[in-house]
Each structure stands twice: as structure tokens, then as C-alpha cells.
Image (cartoon, rainbow, N blue to C red; front, top):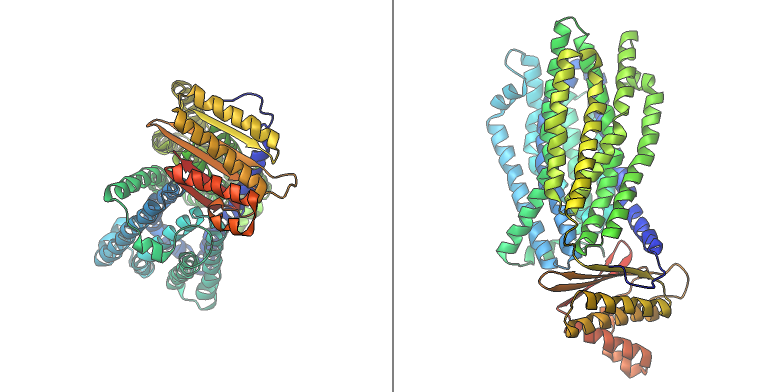
Length: 601
């Protein structure tokens, strides 16, 4: 629905969305970079101090971390997106109960892993590759993995806190806790491994202590602050229908595990890739040991390049989940474009820097010989060709998850990891191991091309019966409000809204916009109101208003103002109270510094 005669094009609101996105992106960007550099620094510290044996232990323990990431992201990542949707829909009690249920399930999974892992540690070590035929490796693996398994509940608690705190309108604290944990992990690794010479025990101790400190910082959100609704007392005391809670949890599983399944494929990919390169080395076709080392170098660099797009995706998720609730496709498209650009701009700069400094980067990881340098530089530069393609695909998958297009997101993930990545890896590893590195641009290019083609086809086939939506952006000009009211009247008429409900919707639009102009705006330029009117099946009619004024909650307006002879304020109060009485629900929240009102009829 477009209405008639509205001269505001939406550029004002895009500016508001841009500011909201930057507030989410910058903390996420810092956290993602901190984590990626901490991962690389951990490998450098252990490898340089303990040597190949230490790196082998870290490599053999990688599947444990991947399982943690699979479960942690599956529960907490999907749960955070569902939490954003529930709070946007003003279902606060359900959001609190949903958080409590997921937390209990994930912490229980951590306790089970810790118990079974310690009971069957010998079997696990053999399965991971640390067999009895190599007692030194096996002993070191036991020293490293036992504390790692025991701390499983702590790792999962951190996943919960980070994802939910960020989604609960506190990305700054989420970034702070995550960054403190990553930096502390690096510093303690240097202290324990290099200074105190504690070996792999020092490395795993540094990781566990850093996780505990990060969880302590993040948990402040549960006890204080103005942002969000997640407070420990509220979480424990909230009540809601069990069926609704389970439905919300199922939605979280679908969203989270459709993405986290990639961690399982990553483990399989690394295992297959290493074995193919070693096999080619035994056949004399390449230097197998060197190829495996270069493969590890490429994977470590990928942690850095992918972090930029991960930050862009994480900043996008709460916003896209919020605007998808009111079917604001115009804003959703702009948010997606912002996320892609936010990933591409720093991502391309990072790729150019790594490509230009490929030689020094290889030397930093100990690959300084002539042959090693030549292979490493070539492999890195070929890999970097795939980074922008991979990043765009990552943003698209995250966008579809947060907007409840879970099946499409799961399809894109499985397409890349199962249908394309593994076969391409096998083909190049068997027939052209010397050009093994081309698997990255081939995989990402094919995956992105297919996903974009299917997305375009899907968009064309689903244009049949869209939900009617009216979206407008106005300033503090009463003439624009009059034009908006005409568009709202036309919207109600075109969509056969019952006369009584139509009158209430138009009254709500007029009163809430007018009271914002009169009570909240200062009269300066750059003040805007975004109005979204939705006619959902049911029927269910939603009015969603967001404005750029300082903190202003119309529900705080009291009839007591009449005692002060403030006639204009009294009229405003009467209008707001009338809407509140007639509406099925009327809620307010301050989200990312903007006032958000949701009215349902």
C-alpha cells in the first residue's frame, strides 16, 4: 500500500535505522575481532612454546570446541532471535519464560557433557585420535580436555549470556564482556604457558578462567540497568502457558540449529582436508606436512576475515527480527543492505591487507622457508578471493533466520557445506592437491550464485497474497500528519477494516503522533516519526510507531495534569487514555535510544 500525496520518501527513517544499526555493529565488530585474534594468538603462543606436540593437542581438542559451538549457538543464538521477536511483539512474559526454559535445557546439556566426558574420557581420547600408540600425545590431551569438559556448563552459560544480553538491548555490555574474556584469555596464555611454563594445563586454565570472568561481567545485566527486560527476579517469577513456551522454544531450535549445523560440517571438512593432503604427501605429489601447515594457516586467517561479516550479521539480527514482526519490508531491505555493506567495506580492506602482507603473515606462523613461503602466499591469496562471497552468503543466511525464513536458511547452509564444499574438497584433494586452495572460491561462488537464484525465484512465487502494510515517515509538521491520516483512511477502506476498528486505528495514529509532536519534539530539524499499519489475518490490526525524540513514554501521562490547569496536556492525556482503554494491547519500550509504541486492535 502506498497511499497518495505523501512527500516524505523514507530517507529520514533510513537515517534512524542507520544509527540504530551502528549502535549494534560497533560493539559486535569489536567482540568478533577480539575473538578472532584471541584464537590466532592462542595457537601462536602454544605452538611457539610447546612446538608441534602442543599444536597437535590443540588440534585434537578442536572437536570439543565445535560441539560446544554447535549446541551453544543452536540454543542461545536461535533463542536470542526469538527473544527479539517476542519483545518486539510485546510478549514480555513469554519472552522471560522462553529464556528460562532454554537456559535450563542448555545448562543441563552442559552438565551431562561434563559428567559423561569425565566418565568415558579414555574412549573419547581414542575417538579424537589420541590413541594408546602415542602415550605422550594421549597424556597431554587428557590434561587439556578433562578441564575443558568439566567446564562445559560455564561455556554454555557464556553463550546464553552473550547472545541474550546483546538481543535484550544491551550490545555494549555484551561486547565488553566478550572482549574482556578474549583479551584475558590471551594474557593468561602468555603468563601460564610462556612465563610460568605450565604447558597445555596452563592453556586450558587460561581459557576457563577467561570464560568465568566474561560470564561475571555479562551477568551484571541480570541485576541492573535500564535496557531490556531480562532481570533474574523477573525470569524466575514469570509465568506463561506451557504450550506457548514450548512453541517459542521450538522456533528457537529451528532458527539456531539451522545455522549451527555448520560447525559439524566444519569439523568434517577439516578432518577430510587434512587426511587428503597427508595422503597426497605420502604419494609424493606434494609436501603433505607443509600442505597441512598451510591449511591451518588459511583456516586461522579465515577466523579474522569472517569475523567482520559475523559482526555485521549479529548487529542485523535483532533489528530484522523486530521489523519483520510488523512486516516492514522496506525497512528490512534497507537493514539487509546495511549489513552487507558493513561487512564488505572493512572486509575488503582486511583482505587487501592480508593479501599484500601474505609473506610476513606466513612467517608469523613459522612458515619462513622458501617453499613454505611460496605455498603459503599462493594459498592465502587464492583463499582471499572467496572471502567477500562467503561473507555475503553468511549475511543472507542470518537475515533469513531472523525473519523466520528458517527453511531457506537451513537449505542454504546445507547446500554450501554438504552439497558443494565436501564434494569440491574431495575432487581437488584427490585429483589436484597442488591446487587444493581453489576449493574456497569455487565453493563460495557456486553457493552464493545458487542461493541468489533461488531467493529471486522464491520472491517471485510468493507475491500472491502479501500482508497489507502502510508505512510512512513524517516530521513534526502538522500538514504531513494530515496527509498521513488520509493515507490511513484509504488503507482501512481498501482492506475492508470494520468501521469501528478503522475509527480507532485512525484515532490512534492521530493522537499518538500529535502527542509526540507536542510533548516530545523540540521543533528542531531531524526529528521524525515512522508509522507502520498492518492488517494481519485473523483479523488482527497492528499500529507500530517509532520516533527519534528523547525518552518519551505516553503511558506515563497522568490525568492529574488537570489539577495544574494545563488544558493541552489534559487533552493529550485523555486521547492516550482512550486509546489505551479501547486497544487490545498498548505497549511502549525504548529500543536503541528510540521510542517504540505498539498498539493492537
